[in-house]
Amino acid sequence: MSRQADGKTVSVSRFYPSSPETTFDAWINPASIEKWFGPPGYQAKVLSHDCRKGGVWRFMMVADNGESFHHFGTFLDIDPPRRLVFSWASEEQVAGWRDASGNPTRVTVEFEPRDGGVEVRITHENLQTDAARKALTGGWRGSLERLAVCFANGANT
Image (cartoon, rainbow, N blue to C red; front, side, top):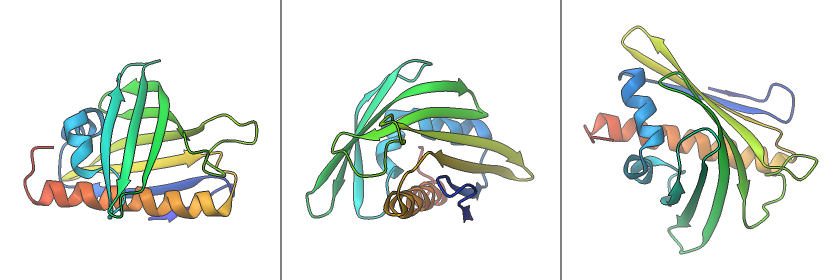
């Protein structure tokens, strides 16, 4: 599921037959992140990941063709296993991946318990261009799908 509520926000969600704790851990454990984060055709390399409020993160996304992009941000709120909030920007200055003031955009990941599992909802705010919204909708959907494959294959994310 995805939507663009205010024209600058993208939201995608997916249900997993796992606990909120297990799913939350997949988002904060660097070794797990490298197994699933990013759309198909990309591999995440965690360069730094200080998972605490005010801590910074930095990933390198490497495409199958060798092209790479670096994304970074700061953890703004961490409420295990319910919520994770962080800023998001690209070192390569991808157009629209910063807000109108030039600041990083904001990502909120919510983990809602449901019968038999958890629904993960990602909301990415302040995206300034259609191209950024399209790219990040596909990227987040792809990441959620790759996480589902890890869970289905019994990977200890």
